Image 1 (spheres, helix red, strand yellow):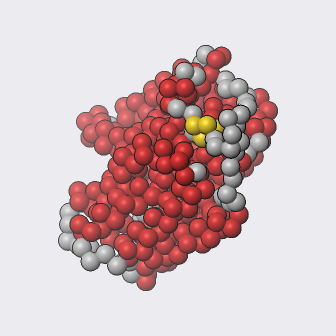
Image 2 (image 1 turned 90 degrees about the vertical axis):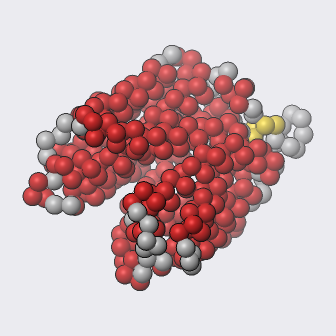
Image 3 (image 1 turned 45 degrees about the horizontal axis):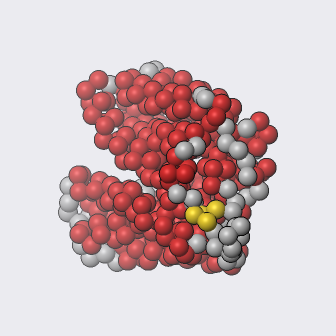
Length: 380
């Protein structure tokens, strides 16, 4: 799964930079070009309620492979899309496949990783994604010389490799329960009764808003504003440093929550990330921005594996938690969708400082959700 995650992330990073340009090549404006990105994210959210029951019915492995197949097929078709409307439809279909393999991957990690190393495994999985996301745009820049359609065909080929690796290494499993060989599904109502899960939903939304929405959409604007004589590379370096900090942290600190508990790691990481996020909006220049991004990445990489491991603790190794994990993922996706739009309006009206203060406040809200001692999950 870690190898497959790396291949998937490389492919995603490969197509992301050229997608708006590809949409614009059909003669549409900036809003329509942005819509192809929103269509993917919106269909992830819309598909989440169905992804959970699908995992419960078919199993994580089958949904994981089908999800990858749908994204691969839609990406290959995108490479040959003759019109903008078809491109929009294909990106939406890709979003459905994406949420299928994301939710099922979380279930597989919960099922396959022993509780005492779950944080470390989650960290390695996340690191594979981050490393792929860093390398993807570099490969994409080279692939773009072959034309705007080539990266989508290459992405489809990369996903085919990921499917082959996953199908080979992930053997069909049938976890047993006291009631027989069919895994007993965990319903959202049951998970909601646990303080850990409620805290997870809040921190997942805050993480999606801040790390996937605000930073990706607003940091490029902030980088341009403070660039001075450094030029257009400031924003790209900031995002690369952010990802590198998270990757380094996940490699060396991912197992911390296995030793001291999920809650202490979440509290420490969220507190530090909130403070650094508030500082981001008032950086005076490129070097300050890069320094804050590096430290923020380290903090995010510190608590992200603990969050993933805590979700796996809630579901356990002998339950099917498709719906529970789908809601967790949907909360992150909603934050990722809302942040660019709402914070963009805040930046236009009041500047970068208030925009990043709002993001910091959401991280503090997540910290408060993790504050009760009952938020520490029991490990099955």
